[in-house]
Amino acid sequence: MRGDAESRANAASRAGTPAPSPLFSARWLRCAADLTAAEPVDEGSAVRLGLCLTDAPAGTAERVLVQADLSTGHLRFSDGDWGERPALVLTLSVADAAVFLFGDAVRRVRLFERDGVRLEGVFLFVFFLDRMLQQDRTGVLARLRAVTTSLPPPRDAGPHARRPHPAPGRADAEEEENEEEARRQAEQILPRALAVLRAELGRSTPGAQLAVVHRASGTRLSVALGDCRPGVPFTRAALPIWYCCSKSVGAVAVGQLWERGLLDPMAPVSTYLPWFTGDGRETITLYQLLTHTSAVPMGLDPLHGTMAAPVALRRERLRTMTVPPDARPGTRIAYAPWWAWFLIAEVVRALDGRDYERYLTEEVLAPCGMDATRVVLSPREYRDTADRLPLIHLAGGGAPIQATHWYATEASCTRPIPGLNIRGPMSDLALFFEALMDGGEGLAGRVLRPQTVMALTARHRVGLVDAFGNADWGLGFRNESHHLGEICTAFSHHASLRTFGHYGLWTSSAFADPDAGLVVALHLNGKTWQEEHQTRMIAFGDALYEDLGLT
Image (cartoon, rainbow, N blue to C red; front, side, top):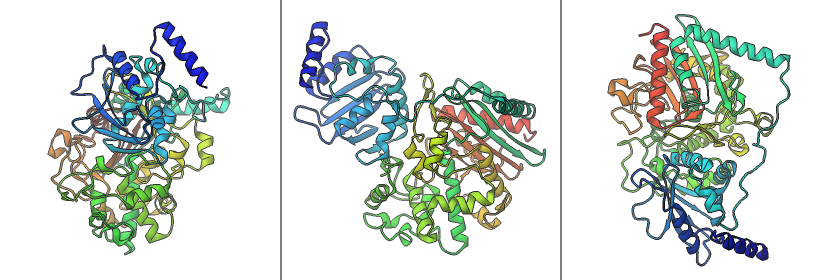
C-alpha cells in the first residue's frame, strides 16, 4: 500500500499536480486554499459548516471551517478560530468527514442512521449541502479528490441503484391508461389548480400526487403527475413520505389516550416517562410539544445526527438532553421536527403497551380506512418497492433539481421516525383529514369524539409568528392564519379560519376546511426554499378554491 501511495505521489509530481496528502493536514489545507482561491464565495450568504474531528491524527486540524456557497457551488476550507459560531457544527471522525464531503449520496445519508455523528444547528441546510456536493458544479471536489489520500470510492452501487424494470405488458398499459384518464378528469374539474402544478414540473419539482374531496360538488379525485424518481412515473398508488404531516396522526393518538383518561396534555412528559427528568427535562409538557412552544429550539434537537438511528440510541440521546437554563417556554415558536414526536411515541407506548407504529396502524389508520399507508415499511416491503419509492429532490436557489436519498434508505424506511416517515398515497392522507372534518368518524369506524377533534384543532398557540410563517397552532395541527398577514397564509387566501392541517417540510401539505366541506392532500417531491414553497402552495390553493367556486 505504501508503495502505491509513493507511486501516485511521484506521478502527480511529474504531472505538476500536488501529491496526495491526508485530509485536513496542513499540506492539504494549503492545497485546498490554492485550488479554491479563484472561486468567489459570498461570505454573507454562504452556509458555514464547522467540523469537529474526534480522532484527528498529529499534524491534522482538529477543527475545520467549511464555507459553502449554495448558489454557486464554491467552497472554502480553513482551520483555526471559527469566529462566529457556524450555522452547522458536525462532530465526527475524519473518515466520516471524508464520507460527508466526498462520499456518494447514499453513504452521506447513512452517516445519520447510526451513532458516531453529532450535529448542532439548522439541519435543513444539510439537505442543500447534499445537493451541492452531489453536483460539484465547479469541479472543486473532483480536484480535491485527486490530491487527497484515503477517500471513499466515488460511487456506491448498492441496493439503491435503479434496478431494470421488465418490459411493459398489457397490465402496465392499462394502468397507464387509467392514470391518464384520472389526469384528464382532474383537469376538467380543477383546470387552474392542475395548471399551477404542471407549471412547477421540471422547475421546482419532478412530480406531484394530489387528492381532493369536496362535498358540495361531489368531487372526489386522486391524480399523479410527472416522475416520483428518475425514470419512474408518479402514480396514484405510489407511497411518498409525509414528513411532518405525519405529526397530525400522532396528535390523534394523544387525543385518543386523552379520551380514555390515560393522559393529560398539560402534564409534564416525565409524568409518563420517569426517565425523562433532570437538567430541566421535567419542565417540558405534552402541551408544549404539541404546540411547538417548548424551551428547546430546533437547533438544539438532540436527535439531529441520529434521527434514523436505532431506537435505544435515540432514547439515550433524549435521556441526557439539556433544557437551556434561561429559556422561557411558551414565549416563542420552537419547532421540533424529531425529538418532540419521539417523546410522544414513547408516551403512547408507555400508556398503551403497543409500539407507536402498531398503535397508529390499528387505532388511527384502520378506522380511517387508510389501508395503503405504512407508519414504517417492513424490510420485505422496502426491498420489494425500493426502486419505485418516491425520492425527495432538491430544487430552488438557481441550481438544477437533484434526487436525494434522505429518508429513502432501508434504515430510514424500516425504523420508525415518529412524526416524520409515514408513507402513503395522498388519497389515504385525505381520508384521515376527512374523518376529522366529519367529527372523528372514519370510513371504517370512529377515530375520535367530535369534542376531541374540536379540542385538537382549536387555536391553542396564538400571537406567535416565526420567520417561516408559522403562526396559530392547535394540538398537533396548523391553523389557517391569513388574517395575520401574507407570510402567515398557510393553505389559501380563500380558506376559512376554521381550516386546520399541516405542512411536510416544504414538500407536502394537507388540510380540511369544514366551512367549505373541503379536504386537500398534496405532495410535491421537489423540496425548495421556504419562500418559493409557500408561493407555489398558496398559488395552488387559491386556484383550487377558484375552480370549485369557493371564492
